[in-house]
Image 1: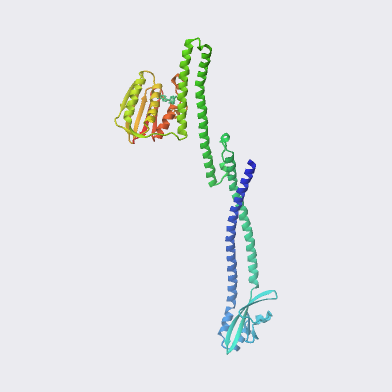
Image 2 (image 1 turned 45 degrees about the horizontal axis):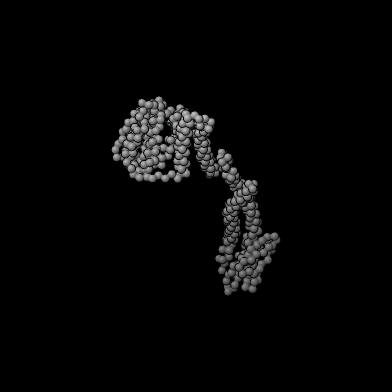
Length: 453
Ligand code: ADP
């Protein structure tokens, strides 16, 4: 099936290649024909012209004569040209010496005549005179044998040149077009073979020429993007399964414990119920986050945007944080009446992630500052802590899905490494951006920019 498709494709390409090279050959042949025909016309014209000019002085002499006797005498004494004079009864009354010596037969003609004599070709033309009340006719002969031989040689050479050139062009054109189409064959073959199992297929750029290099590179770049997106997706699914496996294993463990001892041992009963509840909540939280990210990936997340008072939202966050966390000092510096156009709930969700992280990664007794101000066209919310900070090595990755700094992996800290990825999605969807500065052991500062209105 696959081979048949390939053969058909090759056939299609080669017929296209032949059509292209045939087109160029035809164009070249037409052009060459025009050139060669023009050369032949010029040669014939030139020969005819030179023949005419050779006899012109003799004709001029004849034209100067005023009597029949004079013109007869002028013809008889002419040595160079082939002249014969006829009277109105078609009788020859004079012939030039050369005409007599070549033994040519003179026929009466009206305008033009031709004859072959002694393997030579002659063309004759007639010229009428009226002298002393007589109609006379001068027949002038031209020996065109040499001219014909010239034309024959030039014509033969031209035809030979024509066929050699056309053949060369056809062979070269065919070779070049087929070479070009070979890359397309490879292109089609690779594209047909691409599947999720071999996204690493690439075109060999060194095989291509000029524009085809660009085509191959574009194809390869597209494959790079697809492969990296696919790898990310695969990693995401594998990380998600891994994260879900732990709470499932914990729940299964406690269920087994309940089965064995839970009916008799009250302590084990309560401990198991509490643990199962905690893990179920953990799973619920993870599934919610995964759904959120999936919705964003599918572009189906709907933001309900409205103009709202960001200063009020920030004050609300401060109050909630003070209630939630009594072990750290929460400070606030909120500029009043800053309005932003956006989805209030989502923005609160994003800020919550930054504030929760500040609490999670700052020791008890530490300080957390929540600030809101303006910077140009942006409202800037800052979450600053003097907690454990993030190393330079980890900083570029903290917004990646499932990325967690090694030291934050203890299970009691909670979290799955999805918080900042979600916060980033929300901020970017609002046309905003995030800046982080952090120093290991000294603390972190997250600045979140939202466009004002
Ligand atoms: P997690 O669920 O692990 O908190 P996040 O995506 O919210 O996941 O954060 C990713 C990682 O960034 C965390 O594991 C943590 O190491 C680091 N991080 C985030 N915020 C802070 C902060 N304020 N101080 C120190 N480290 C932080």
